[in-house]
Length: 419
Ligand code: HAM
Image (tube, rainbow, N blue to C red; front, side, top):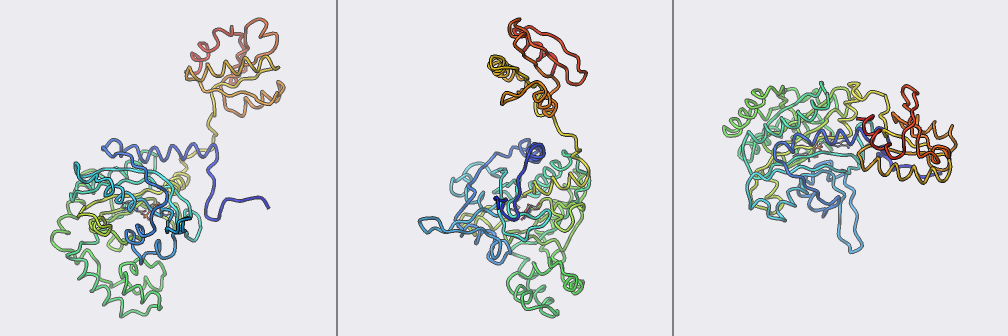
């Protein structure tokens, strides 16, 4: 049997692959406008970075990491997310010694060994942003606004924003204890009971109806926030409202990574089925210290590029008309014509006109079929008689009108026509 892409992965092929590039660009564009600098980190890191950063008790670390020993016996892991790597890079290069916050964005592949289904892949793409070293509700609000702008710039209308606060090290312990006490009184299976002791907040996120039914009276973190966390959260909410960004308070919103404190949020789209989150993030004030760095209160998000694409599809934003690959298509008839066409194409491209031609010695009919498929507006037909006369036939593929143009002028003439 021939090879297939590994389970949970897929290939992006033309013409859809062009659209996905444009989606990545659109999600990142608002960040550039707000002074975020581009960072690229390795696709694999020391396994311990994620174990400590993302949290041993999370599904990501306990079940989903692609971990392998290298030839020298180091344990490495393909990155399941970008935040831990960015904090590692900031600490390693002392970026936090300069002006704060350090604002960075990234775009790249992430790897999680998840149960594959629509919208949930083992290899997927995120555009992410992190602002490190400042505790300021305006920074949280800025990032949320920039994320929302990315989605609206793509024409998406049905992305909803869910907002919550998880408290901080002052108020979270008391909330955690109250939640644990409540959960211990429920009728739950052994695995879930074990989770109560390790990470009780995650139990709130359990999607099973029989669990959800028992959670109606569970204590909510919003009711346990300390004065500082409450004021902080109110300011984030105020700034979002003032910016015209609609949000829904979701006191049950729990994220799948352990590093969050205070502000947490998710962008969701209802056209995606069960994998509805198109992006998510929040504040992670303690992560730097967990990675042996100084206190560096920070906030960030990551948007799922693949799911954003699915959301666009669900809203009918992709259309089905194939985009033109090139503007001009060369149809050389004979060896000498092919040599000349090859050079004309070079000149056209240098002049900013995209061009392709028939390769493999095709005859007129086959070559014209290629011209049609390329989506080009113009075909350049060059036969032996044309060559002798130093002319080329320029055929407008929309109107079928054909004109003869001197070879010396063809680049200028086409430049005028395609603009
Ligand atoms: P996350 O919620 O795990 O957060 O992932 C962010 C987004 O990546 C999700 O909302 C989703 O759109 C996409 N995503 C996650 N897993 C998959 C998958 N298996 N298949 C397709 N798309 C997926 C983070 O990764 C945090 N690092 C975000 C963050 C940055 N928090 C602070 N700074």
